[in-house]
Image 1 (cartoon, one colour):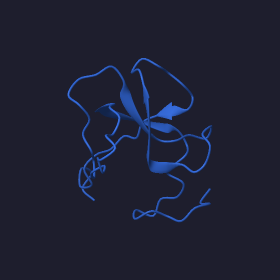
Image 2 (image 1 turned 60 degrees about the horizontal axis):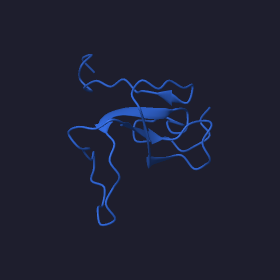
Image 3 (image 1 turned 90 degrees about the vertical axis):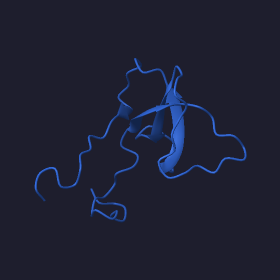
Length: 91
């Protein structure tokens, strides 16, 4: 729909469609922690990280918004983003 400013790749409205499943195990941030770029969770745990927010979340949807859920849980509010190296297809 293009209702928001495009990101660095020229894509619009990439946040707020579905919560994005991440491979990281969830752990709360300590009060003194400043999240790093691509922060890593603990090595083991029960729940996984969800990021961003969905069409059903209260605004605003932000990339640093986090939630947790058991890996087997399914919802129309959850999804994932396939990714590959930028040059994988010769572009």
